[in-house]
Structures are given as structure tokens and as C-alpha cells.
Image 1 (tube, one colour):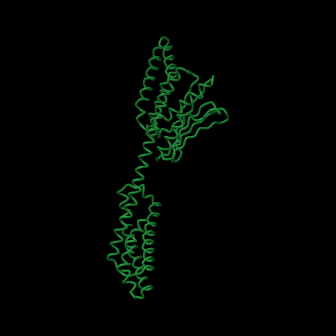
Image 2 (cartoon, helix red, strand yellow):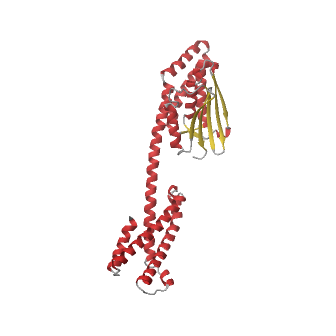
Image 3 (cartoon, one colour):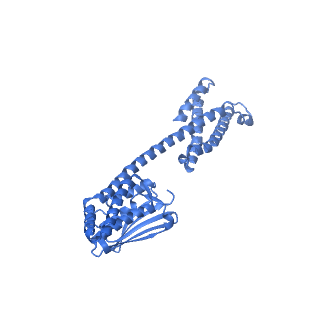
Amino acid sequence: MGWGLVSVYWAYTVYTRDNYGVFYTFLNYVADASIGIALTHMYRNFAIKSNWSNLPIRKLLVKVVPLVLLLSFLYMEINNLKWHGFMLFFFDKEYDLWTSLLYWDPILITGLRLMSIWVLAYHLYHYYQREVRTAKENARLLVVAKQAQLDNLSAQLNPHFLFNSLNSIKSLVIENPDNARRAIDLLSDLLRSSLYEKDKDLISIKDELSLVQDYVELEKMRFEERLQLEIILDKSLHNFKIPTLSIQLLVENAIKHGIDSKIEGGTILLRIEKDKDTIEISVQNPGTIARHKEPRGLGLKNLQERLTIQYKGKARFELAEYDNTTVVAVIRLPITA
């Protein structure tokens, strides 16, 4: 539309000033619009393939300026060839080809102005679209993350959980005061972490594991030897950032739907390992996935959505059952998001 409107002005000029007539004016209009569209379409394809829309403004300017100059030069030369052809074939006027090609004023200036305006408008539009998408993704991530944090917090603060924890502490007060004090400390730390860590989108694996171990130790007051936790960790990943409370959610589900449903209890196996350019976090527990219920609860759905938004579709969450005896939840995160 832009090139079509600009070409209308030039068509009007050649019709009134140069007496081109209707046919030649229309032919000139089509040629002018086609030249502009072809050149800018070539630039657009190159910019898309080079992923320039995601570059910061300074880096983009360094790449754009030389190409604007090149586009302006090509615009000048193609227009010169167009005029040379018009004079030669339609008006029977002889012009030297090199003289036509070297004619630059005002065509080069016009090309420089038009190409600069088009390229600026193109990138401003895509920059605006990128900012809008980023703002929407951040807002969506914030809502989902807050919901997930509230789900975890409510799970930790629900009456059943507190009732069991306080009952365990009550029974220890007389029998083992030291363990009772330790249980109170664990419950306090767990609730404090839930309240303060919820404001963070990401947390180091080291800090997340500390929260998980406190949670499991507190649950062991109730399950005793029925609950065991085994951790296999690549220690080089201690400082790697992951979504807050993500491992804690998987361990909590493993206890709730696996260990608690088994009379003999069982062991939760937590693995955190590196595989090339991916971090794999898996939580394995005895049990099965209930077929008559939705296999993924609200907490897991929110976790999956957080992963999708946070890592732009590069992270994965899977929940699988093996041999009707074991359930494995796996989070795969890219090392570079």
C-alpha cells in the first residue's frame, strides 16, 4: 500500500509534466510500485532469516545502515535502467547506457529517503509487536506463577497437613523434646520459605533442595521408616536456576499419591543430571497413575504452563507410569533459556 501510494505521486508527475499519456503513465506506475515492493521484500526476507527482529536496537542499527545504503543504490540503478528503457523503446530517444546508470541526483537521494522510512517503519512495527508479546508473556507468567505458588502454599497450609505435623510434634514433646523442637523448626522454616520464596520466579537448585529436604524430614515425623528420599545430584548444577517450588511440588505429589497409598511406604528417588544442553530433573516413586481421575492435578498443570512460558516452549514436563508399580515425573530444562 505504501509503495502504491508513493507511485501515484510519480504517476501524476509524469502524466502532467512529461505528457506520458494514460498507457505509459500506468506502465510507469506499475514499474515504480514493483521496484519498491521487490527491493523491500528482499530486505524483509533477509531480515527474517537473520532473525533481526530480536536484536537490540544498537546491534540492529549497525546491520541496517549498510543495507539501507545498498538498497538506495539498487533503487537508483534499477530506476535508471527503467528510464533508459522508456526513452529507448517508447520514445525513440538515444541515451548512453553508462550516462543513464551514473545519473544519481535526485534519484539516489529519493531512494535513500524512501528506503530509510520503509526500514524504520518495518522495524518499529516489529519492535512494538515484540514488546507487546513480551509484556503479555510476562503478565501471563506472573499470573500462572502466583497461582502455582498459592497452590503450593495452600497445600502446605491445609488443615490436613498442619494437623498431621502438629500431631507428630505433640507426640514428640514428651517422648523426645529434641526431635519436637527440630520438627517445630522445620515447620517454621517450611512455612517461612513458602511465604518468601513465592515472590521469586527462579531459585537455585541448592536452595530448592534445602526446602525439599526440610519438607521430607518433617513428613518423616509421620511416615517414619515408610518414607525414604534418595538424591542423585550433579554437584556442578548447584547454582543452576529453576522455577521456584517445582521440585518441591513433584516430591509433595510423590508422597501424597505414592508413599501415602502404600502400607509399606517406599523410596522417592530424585535425580538431577545434565545431558548435553539439557538439565533433567526426575522424581520417581512407587505407585500408579489413577485412570479414573485426571492424571495431572492443578499444581502440575500450572507447573507445565510456567515451564512453557518461562522457557518459551523449550522446556518439557512428562508424567509416566512403568510396569504398574512406578510413577516418574520428569522436568527437562534447557541450559541456556
